[in-house]
Image (cartoon, rainbow, N blue to C red):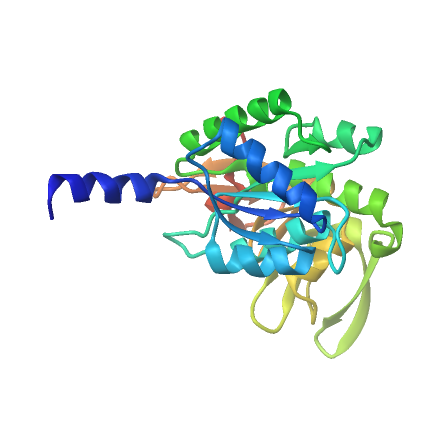
Length: 284
């Protein structure tokens, strides 16, 4: 291979890939044109007309950045972001984990939404995307993409909490009240377990283990369903198969591989934190 070919391959490999999702064609065209001005090397690999299509295109193309309109048919931008997060974590492995793309929401002016976005878990653009504001967003995206190493904070509790609040704001009917009690199998009996007594949940292919300080039980409900039914400020997802009660966390240490491990109060179980959620415990 010639040096020129090697150089070209390197440039292509380093290109940042993006998916745009907006049900309004003119808005997609405007965003594409303005991104070309402020981020000419960005490779827009696909455009979606609704949230469901956005999820499929992200799964197909594995982009670095996704621009999601908040209000879209089939799935809203918030719902699409939750599907994308679950998809990335479900596909992760112990060594090479699928990374969740950086998420930028596109919204008409909505003060509640803006306040939620400004917590810093995700970025946002107001319609129409003004060049100066878009340039600041691009600068932040470039910085975050450049600093990605062995950990990524985007899966952390802040994102879960922001998406939960935004989903409740834009589509209150989509969220039910958080669970307060579980019906779980303990031996040959069904017992009622208050959610605040649960230390952690661990799932396998068929069952989810429910662990309290005094008993172990099992339910037929996967983690991805529990995430939507629990208070995201009370239970943090730390792995694709694990949820932990924040109040039950005693300490977090690193093991011999450098991975974070959660020690649970009053229980010998050690819970591994996947790299996708390592940003929950900053400074570790």
